[in-house]
Image (cartoon, rainbow, N blue to C red):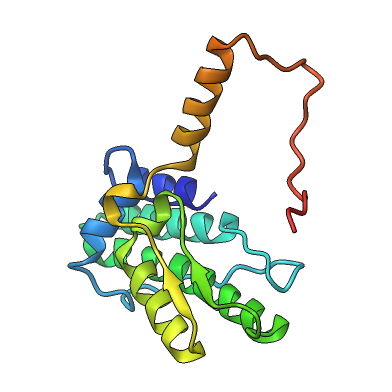
Length: 176
């Protein structure tokens, strides 16, 4: 998940949990071009994975530490944040262009990562260039999806609703 990627990057920099807001704040004072991080390679054109990016980031941090260099934390945070947000917006742009924006009157950001300032700026630019509306919640309403799921589960449990141990996730479930 995107939040988990930010959490791991924050941990590598010695920042507390949750990492997303900490990386975002620190990155505002950094140079997003200071470190070159790899582009994720995925099978699907619209898929993304941050596994290799997280590994490359960790290796960069460890290499600097092993050399005894002071970590340029703001630059590292800005470079990581830019890489993640660029990947998300470029995949969204590709999808909208290839599938056509006809019939779409907007693009929505949601979940905890929608509070990320760089992602918000990049989404605004993308939507302006494509001529579609951008829907984003106010920052105070950008909450972690896991917290929302946990809250829903709590109330279901309080109502006596449970699921069997054979319940399984369906990650490729099509909603439309």
